[in-house]
Amino acid sequence: MSLLRGCSSLSHAPCVYLPWSPILPVVLLQVVDFSKENNFHPDNADYYDRRGLSAATHVFPVISNPSNPTGHTRWGEELKGLMELAEQEKNGILLDEACESPLSPYMDTSP
Image (cartoon, helix red, strand yellow):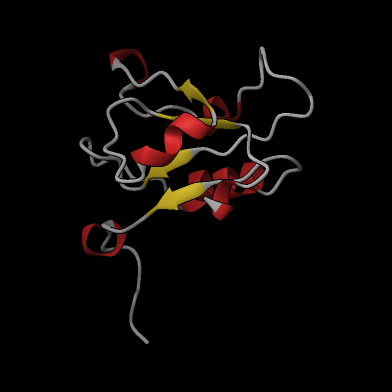
């Protein structure tokens, strides 16, 4: 819960399994479009859509990377862009990358 202190809006794609779902009722939940039209891969900016939110609202997306169940992975410039959005004022992110390394041969995880 301390992770979300000061957060007033949480956005996520609806088919993502959220093991942290018990915390969701404490904040305003915005569901990001996750459909055939966007190839089940929302744009980074979709998670930070502030339409209908007050200027004081903090936005804190919850994103699995790779996505569950599609396996879409944000990496390279797309991941960098997501982190740049997350670092802006009144933004944050919970990026769940628990399955990232085994599924991403491009990432060198050696010591």
